[in-house]
Length: 78
Image (cartoon, rainbow, N blue to C red):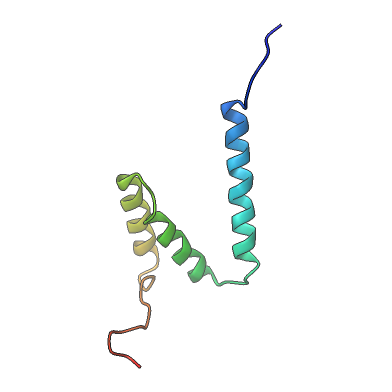
């Protein structure tokens, strides 16, 4: 009989997915707009460790939503 210690890779992935879904639910509970959802995805893409993936995702989002990174906050604005 084989005894397993610890969790399998599949079990770890399932747990990561559940955590990600809980985070998405928390964000959705704020009642945000589609633009805000895309902005959150954009900011998260900038946090990726894989630079190539970060660039692909961030450029895709910026291309899809031209005014995505317009913040309305300018230096010296009061």
